[in-house]
Length: 229
Image (cartoon, rainbow, N blue to C red):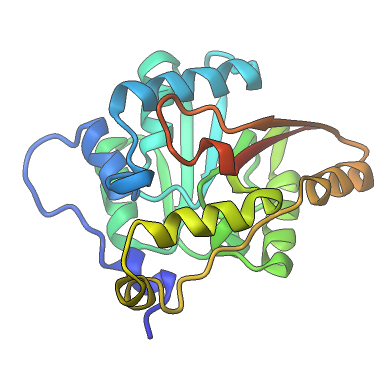
């Protein structure tokens, strides 16, 4: 039985030349079926999130579960930023380091995120569904402690739409194909109140918002959260 770590550690960039945003998006898994995001839509989405964060020039932005760095790369197309990130997939971190050689990228578990080296904004995009609730709580707390200004968690599977989301995933394959493809690859779904409760415990302002990636089939099953310090 495979697991998510095995899946992501198989993803590497073996081509020559410059890494493009389209290549980074594909390496980060937004490359097929209902999960496909086109570069223009990705840029529009990243711009929306930058506006929600009130991102300023020269800020330090760190991504937990950064993969190949597609989100940070797109942010830096429109903003001058100091960036860093962590991911357990060495091949993806190699791609992030190659595409953003001045960034500080580390191979490691999300739960080992260094909280001493603080950044203004600490983000996670499309990774919380790989965490169980206990691990997610640990990671979110480290993100909050690392951030000076705000934390953003995006692409969170909404518990309220779990049945509909799982049905769409199953309907894209015949039953046997689905069983083989997703054996051991479950997703964790989150109640929006889970993030509200954390914010209350920290005395933080919490902004929740619906999925907002243009032309993205998963929007209705996803939400995002911004916690402000």
